[in-house]
Image 1 (spheres, helix red, strand yellow):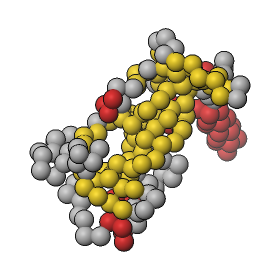
Image 2 (tube, rainbow, N blue to C red; image 1 turned 30 degrees about the vertical axis):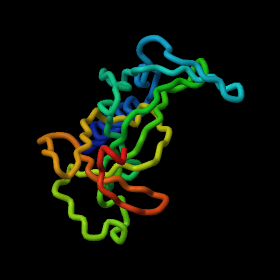
Image 3 (spheres, one colour; image 1 turned 180 degrees about the vertical axis):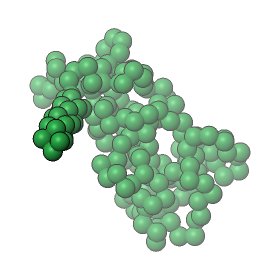
Length: 183
């Protein structure tokens, strides 16, 4: 009986190992792919970039659609909230390069040092701050699309999506009201 139990345990371990191995494999079919025609080609120091309006990843399409092209990105730290960003550029560098995104970041309240936020109180967990920072990320870091609404204080807030009513400048560490005049 004990032999049979050991044999079953060994078979279960081997099956578990095969499943983990399959989960860890990452091939081209798991990568983001550009969609459509190249809209622009840039060439800086021999590094040609082909720019696109859209890409597809995990069966979903994402793109550059003004401020509607916002996405939720995985955080490197699982204990932190997911990141929110607007897609500003989609490109592939080189012939077999990965799809990369240039994104414009938003901050959650906990991403800002409390002494710079002062007395401001968040009305909702959907409140985020516009930030003057762009960065490049791999398209595979996209978790989902999202809606981001820029709403001045005197306007009605939508029931869904993220809300931007403040702008956070990381250089001078100032938080100010968002207005269309200041935009």
